[in-house]
Length: 229
Image (cartoon, rainbow, N blue to C red; front, side, top):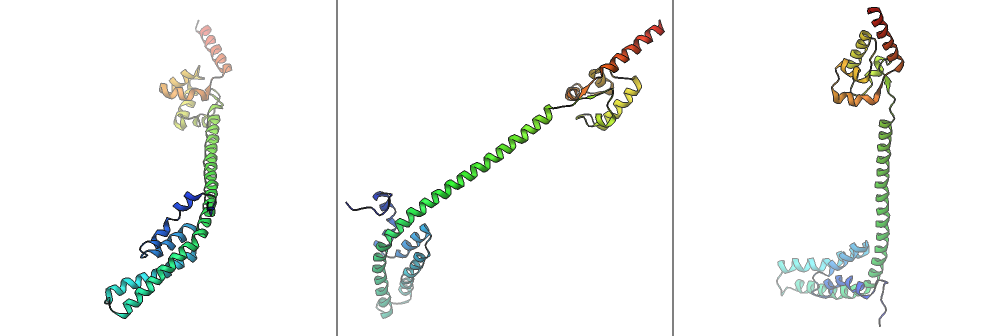
């Protein structure tokens, strides 16, 4: 049994030798065979041979249109074309082994390059995913770690920095606090500055009420009752 040229096996070699049919059959397209194998394995030398074998074909097409079939130049071109066709057949058989070996090696390199590229792409997307996860974790941590401000001790700037409040409501809260002395609860705070229920729910995590102020306020109210009594 004849030994195969490559490690791919006889079937693979036969399938990758079909290009020779362009040379073996009619011969009009023998140059295509060499253009094809040059493209598959990136070999300029076979591209050059493809150009050389295409010249007699082009000359034959031109002469068949411009010259009569009994003209000496037409017959000369036909002889040259026939000779080049025979030469291309022998040439195709000669380069077949080299082509198959180059194709096998080129395919192996291409597979390694594709595998390397696949790993790089996977690593790139994995890094992007990790970065996005880190960003999400930072956002979650920044949202979960909240330092509430005391509505009875906070400055106007501290209240203005609370999400959903802003400078206008902060000014209003400061004016109300000066007017009534202190806020008794967060709900009392929201009611005094006119916060809607859903807005109040959003700002609750950012607020707290000083117990000391609340006791002081209760004491003042008790004193007021004694005086009134």
